[in-house]
Amino acid sequence: MEVNTSVSNGAGPVYEGKEDTLSPEDLSEVLAAGTKEVHEKAENTQFVKDFLKGRIRKELFKLGAVALYYTYTAMEEEIERNKDHPHFAPLYFPTELHRHEALARDLEYFYGPDWQNQVSCSQATRRYVDRIHEVGRKDPVLLVAHAYTRYMGDLSGGQVLKKVAQRAMKLPSTGEGLEFYQFEGIHSAKAFKQLYRSRMNELELDMETKRRLVDEAVKAFQFNMEVFEELEEIGKTIQEDVLDAGTPVHGAMGGDINKCPYYAAKMAASGGTAYASQLAMAVLRHPTGQVLVATWFAALAGLVAWYLM
Image (tube, rainbow, N blue to C red; front, side, top):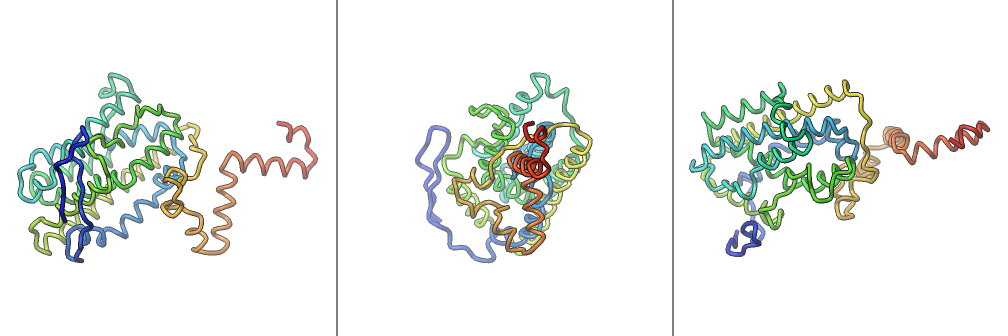
């Protein structure tokens, strides 16, 4: 792959390159294949599905940002510790990628100037953080798996999630509270991901190490799912209205409905009454659908007073 880093956009280098000719043994391909199943499981946790549909509880969103702050702080501490390690140095992009300072600003927005006295590391997040510190100190090559899992995911779906959260919580269009999703040092997410994967593939690793990296990446996804599940449990105890973005997720994807993970056709393809039931429930959950159903029922029953409400 040819990479041009000589052009600057003022915030960092612009990365341009030709498409890679990939081999099934390239680390990026090995990781993508090896984490496909657990990646799909993570995307289908209730917390993530609700988020993608724009159904967001602000308190849970804030707690999610807290979990991310502790996770990225740990990961970036270990990246700094190992920035000269031969198996990680080619992937060291602090200006472009590091997120803990942006997350600190987000938490200050949500909690105020004394945010550090108001937040704490949850049990699920602590297990994730402890594992990151363990590999950073004892087996630094495995940091590649954690960096790949987090940063590539952030660059792939971050802008969609930002728009969903911004709309649902009515956050300022100037980006306050969502700086985590803003990669100011990256001109083109696509080109940067291409560069990052190319750097990964150039690491001199034997197949056994690549298999160990797959195992570690699977663990990283599992840690993330544990955090999501923990947030779901906390959500059951919070009495708070769900904030609804009010538009389909694919509307935030530049109009490309095929990019929507929960596009109706995909659900319909799974068949039959299950989809019909899900569709009906979706209609009932949506404010417009509730109004239509209520109106129809009121007319049918002749309850004019209820209809006028």
